[in-house]
Length: 227
Ligand SMILES: [Zn+2]
Image (tube, rainbow, N blue to C red; front, side):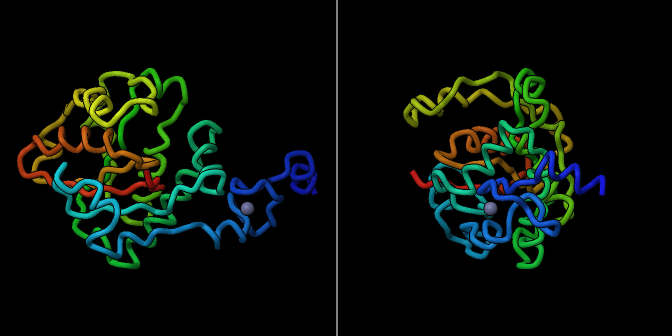
């Protein structure tokens, strides 16, 4: 009864479309869950993300959970994850995608998962790193360890939306540092982020990691935005 009362006062709503959730539903209503625009890129060696990085950085695999569509459930999910303190949502999406990767035998030779780090000031301001939540969710079902220590972000970069690719690249080129090369040596790293657009941030972070001997990189994100 108390639970029913609680739900009347604080109704649980879908992060995608804000309709009330049934008792058996979590985070997303069945409609939004069944209609998320999944990419299934992990099933294909060549896909729009590997093409985006061709000639930029060598990647073993690259994939994204779903397509980013404006004004869609995906945009609402990502917004809640980034600004709405929806921490369990981030883990939940990671677990969902990690299950897909495991069931499809994709990304099997990954050694560890590294989320794109936030600068400490941003982390303190937001209270969490949304990419790290996704990484922990992936780890729960895909069963690879998450490394939050070996790569750090040096500067809090300004908003990148109005810059061209070259300016963005210069902006992020020295943003990341390696703090524990030993932990990364000879490792195949799955670098994860929330959204991929130009790929400049992932490229900069991957370039730093690739300076460590024997490393290789794959990429997984929650959403892929076509430019
Ligand atoms: Zn919904």
